[in-house]
Length: 429
Image 1 (tube, rainbow, N blue to C red):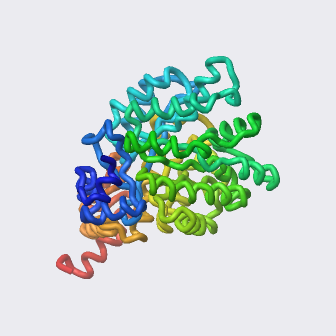
Image 2 (cartoon, helix red, strand yellow):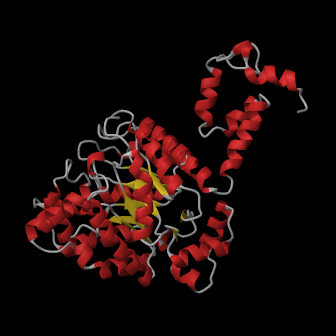
Image 3 (cartoon, one colour):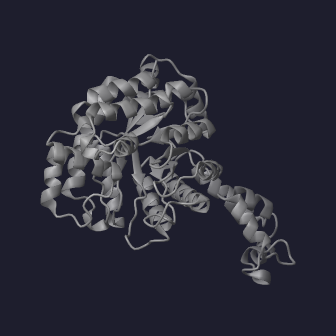
């Protein structure tokens, strides 16, 4: 029985109960969200009992960390180290986006080592398999793509990104719109190239019912990918992006009817003044489906600091109702991230998620900040460091410059406002 089927029949699964406990909500609240499709719990039937993470309306904003090799950089030990750091830093899920090396072995190792849900993009492996057989992606057979999707689900993958909304009609819009950066999604580009040269419809769209059958068999969550997301703020919220979203909205309804958990991926590069409207539009067009955004990046010039640009956009998106933030690292647009990039990306994105949770009134969000402020007023450094979103870094910085008076720090020293005012107002106040 899938999570949706269980919720619809009134059966509160262990995953529903665990998510309810984590979120300070009732099991009935979680079950109702599953029934309506506004909440998903990505956990493959083959991996039940290992973890449970809820994503969606009324729940804390979640953070995903991308891992994986490239054709130019294959090192499984490094990817497992990145996985460990991502989870330690607080990532709620990870995605294996590997395109280099033994992809099945890499995926198996990540699945075995992960204590959080794992997602993949099967078309990446489909493209690699075709290339290794000395063919072009346009020569890929439809059944080959579905075979890879099933292989991923059989291996225990909890959610898969599938670019079902990239259709022939949207391709026509792309040709006519004069985009600045055209297409920046790898999966989207694979699908577009296949459609163009074969003069056929996207098989993920045309055979969507087959895809739903596969997902339901393993109770895997479909993440409907934004293959035409804007790759520059100049292209944000254009006809192509909206055209794909309209198609995805129709597919969300079909997935729910079939009893398949589904969420929607979003942009991308979006100027700050359009982030909120993008979230509102997705929630309207896609009928409240959980919204999974990359960043969004609110400027194109932050190379080396894209985790900052992504955190700014992510905070606004989360406050507006986005449910799931894909991290951006300092190496975005520049190289494959290393372990330190992963840690920085996760922490920056967690801050953005928390900022949004305060605005959304998520249980426990404001209380965390209130506790930190109490500790600061009391000059309780041990508590302050424990409450920091990154206690390790906060402790390291504190210890690197310790004053003689342990109640203060070297920023203000003897002129510490907190300490002076405490003397004026009294210890008891």
